[in-house]
Length: 69
Image (cartoon, rainbow, N blue to C red; front, top):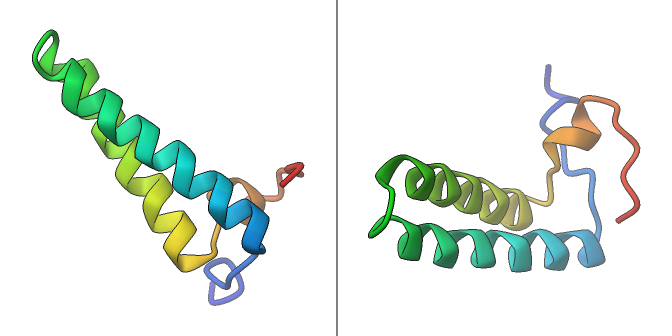
């Protein structure tokens, strides 16, 4: 299980996930005013992407999915 959580993305992937996470977080905060559930989904996705960026870990790559970045 420890291999599953080891860092598996480099600087370029971390930056990409950080940008996507920030965009999702901002979109989620805006969407909460219109529809609560969709806003919460975007906020959760944004926070998870920011966590991936900070940890250098990608869930898709840990599960064996080949990603470009």
